[in-house]
Length: 142
Image (tube, rainbow, N blue to C red; front, side, top):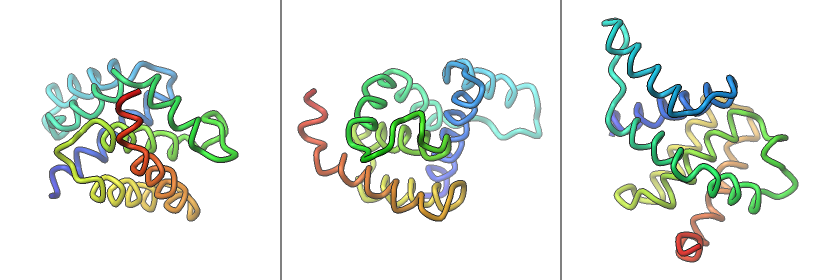
């Protein structure tokens, strides 16, 4: 589904921008929405992009805890910014968006890593999100 793919990519870009600027992702999202409304050359921010960013923002602390807990030998601060934000987006969608099949989430996040990150990143992203997928029933209860 191309629309969902684009929505995920834009959500990732918003999370990345917030991380790079040290800004709240909801503020960055609002900036993107405002900009898309005032500049007809910019595509609108989709509902699904907003849902992903807002969903992550509401669970950011928990998501970062999970990523830190299950990443082997990598702290959040040491991770490349791209990888960290792909993982954040993927963890949110994997654990809290039931409408998206887990395999789709993993594949989409690996594709983002292939497009935006290092050669090693797709395997890292796949491995960590795969671990969260295995533990999903217990993680959602916590």
